[in-house]
Length: 344
Ligand code: PHE
Image (cartoon, rainbow, N blue to C red):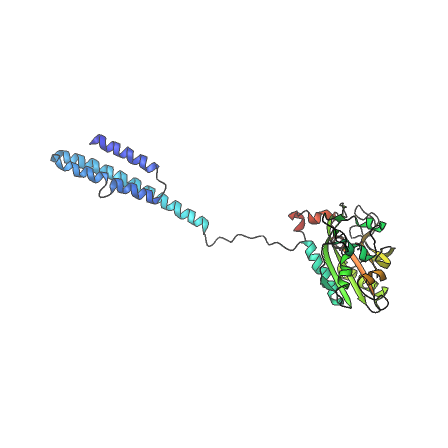
C-alpha cells in the first residue's frame, strides 16, 4: 500500500506537468480524486483490512488525497489567472485606442487642385486628354511635321505598336499640348480649357523628371489678344506663388504659337540671386503664346474669325517655385520618402 501510494503521487506529478488548460486539469482531478478515481479505489480496497491496519492506511490515503487536492487548487488558480490576464491584454477598456496615422493627399495632387481652383473663376474647366496619344496630336496637328528638327526638343518616348495610317505612331505624350487640337475637334466654341495630365520625356536631373505633370491652358474665342494671355498669367502668378514674386516673358519659338514666349519666375530658393537649382536666378515654368493659325485649322476652326492663346507649364516645377516650399531637387517629389512628404 505504501509503495503504491508513493508511485501514485509521482504519477500524479508527471500528469500535472503535461497540463496546459483548465480542461486538462479537470481530467486529472477526476482521474485521481473523483468519485470513481484512483483514491476511491484505494479506500474500497482497505475495507478488507483489520481495524488497526485500516486506520493506518486510511490516514495515508487521506494525506495523499489532501496533497493532490491542494496541488490541483493551486494550479487551478494560476491557470485561471493567466487566462484572465491574456484576456485583459486584448481588451482593456480604459486603455487609450491605438492612434492610426492619418495620411494626406500627395503634394502634387494638392498643387493640381489648387491650380484648378485658381483658374476656375476665369471660366477654365479642367479636362483630360490621353496620356498615350498619336503623334499626330502631339506634333503634326501642332504644326510640327514628321521631319521637323523642332521635334528633338521633346525627347519623346515612342510606344512599340503598329502605326496608324493617318495619325502615325503612338507616343507617351511629351507635353499636354496634344489636348489643344483634341479640344478644338469637340466643336464647342468658345474654349476655356485646363488640361492636366502626366507627360514623359527622356531627361532626369535636379530640375527634370522622366514622368511629370503639365497643365495646359487654352482659350479660343473671337477677339482674344495677347493682353488676355499676359493678364491670365499674371493673375495666376499672383495667386499661386505668393507676394514678392515676379514672372517674365522671354521671346521664344514654338511651332504651334505665334508669337511665342517662355515664362520664367524669379527663383523661390535664392530669390533671383542664382543657385544650384536655377543657375541664373530665373526658373523656366513653361511656354505660352498665341495659337498658330495652322493649329486652329487642324482643329477645324476658322482663324479669320477666331483667335486664341495657350500656355503649358510643368506642375512640379511650378509647385517648387511656390514661396516657402524650399524643395531643391525635383526628384524628392516622387521618391515617396515619408519623412519628406509629411512636411507638406
Ligand atoms: N507644350 C509646350 C512644352 O511643353 C509648352 C507650350 C504650351 C508652349 C502651350 C506654348 C503653348 O514645352
